[in-house]
Image (cartoon, rainbow, N blue to C red):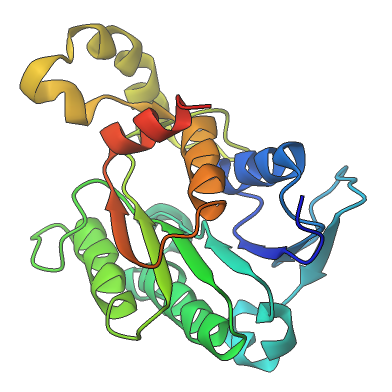
Length: 224
């Protein structure tokens, strides 16, 4: 382990974020991991993790928290939970973009973000369009190393109940068996595999802009 490496995780209480924190602790690549949370994560203990409760609407007030080696952004919500398109866009577009700008000011080496399969700023679907918009904007602010992960349907136990995803997850077991050939890119993926792939990529020295499909995420996660 390089004792000078530090990480910052946004969205640590979410499905991928929670798995990512556990993976980063296990891989022991960072001596300190800062978790930016809206409210403290209960029953969480770690000697290398430090929770920082912040107002995400005022991220610019915490520039010192972004003075880390790598920034992981696992923020995301749903229209139902956000209650409006404007609130959804704030979480999935405004917060990640502001975090990336602060990462640049903090001299972070890498910015890694969970997007989604189908992300497209020209999509007729609002969700995909917002994901595409944030990807597009992140590519224009000249991050030294930007890694975009586009998983398909995520599998795992969420703290909050999402009916549509629950149905999709139940069906995915059967569907994954038949998703071969041209359909393979749409195969559901476990959140812990996305987390592992992010951790592995963060340990590399690659600079530039990289986008990982769900298939590529699974391949990376299965490497080691």
